[in-house]
Length: 345
Figure 1: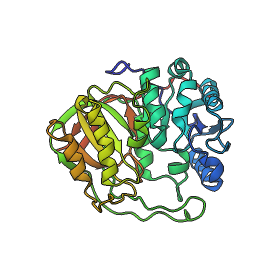
Figure 2: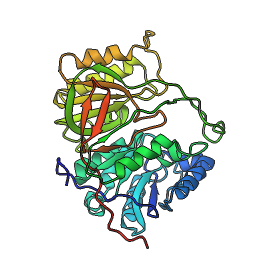
Figure 3: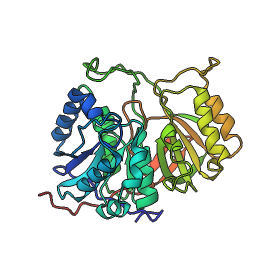
C-alpha cells in the first residue's frame, strides 16, 4: 500500500508480456503500419505482446461494443503471461466501458494499466473503483509506433516510474519537444521536428500531494459519476490538447465552480499540443490559468511534458510527489510498483 492506501501493481521486468487493449478509438485497425511498428518496438525492448481479441477490431465507433471491451480487459488480466496492460490509443469512448469492468478483478490482478488522453477515464476509475495505482504514460500507437522508435526520454521515464525503488525520484525536463503533426500511415515517415522550451513557474511555492494527471477534456466526462476520484490533497496535472485559451478557461472554471479546485494542493499544466487562438484571437494561456487560480495560494507549474507532446513523462496516478514550482521541479516521493514475483511461462 502507498500513503493513500492504494495497492501497488507489480513492476514490469524484461521478458514479461504486455497486453494490448483498445477501449477507445480503433486506431490499430485504422493505422496498421504504425501499429505494426509499435509491436516491433515493444518486442525489441524485451516485451512480448499479447493482443486482446478485439485489439485490432473496428465496430464503427470503437474497436468493439463496451461489454466486449470490458471482457477483453478481464481476459488480459487473467492471462498469466501478461504483466501489464497498455491501452492502444486515445479517442473519446473509453468512458462507456467503465460500468462493465469488474473492478475487484482489476485490483486482484494488480498489474500496471498504462495510457493517457481518453484513457484518463480508465486510469482515474482504476484508482477510485479498484484502489490501485495506474500510470499516465505512453501508448502503443501514439508513442511506441513513432518513426524511428519511441523517444529515449519517454522510455527512460516509463521505466523510472515502474521501478520499485525507495528513493525520491526527481523528474527531468527533456532537452527538446515536439507537437508537429505527421498524419499516421501517410506522413509519419521521418522523425518529427523539435524545439526547445523548459518548464515554467506560474505561481511560486512548494506543495506535497498525490498525483492526479489527465486530459482535461476526458476528466470532464467523469464529473457527476462515481469514477471521479476524491481530489483532496491532489497535485492536479491537467493537459489541454488542441485548445485555445477560451476552452482552457472553461475547463478550469468547471473545476473551480464545482469546488474541486479549492481542494487540490497544487496545479501542473501540461505543455500545449496544437494550441489554437481563442475566438477573439488571444493566445495567452497563462492569463486564464492565473485568473481561475486566483488567490488560492497553491503553486502552479506550466509546460510540463506529460500529455500530447513528445517526448513524455510517465506519472503514477495516486502516488505522492513534491511540486516545487519555484525551482521548476517535480519529484516522486514513493515507489509506484512492488517487485515482481510472477514467473514468466
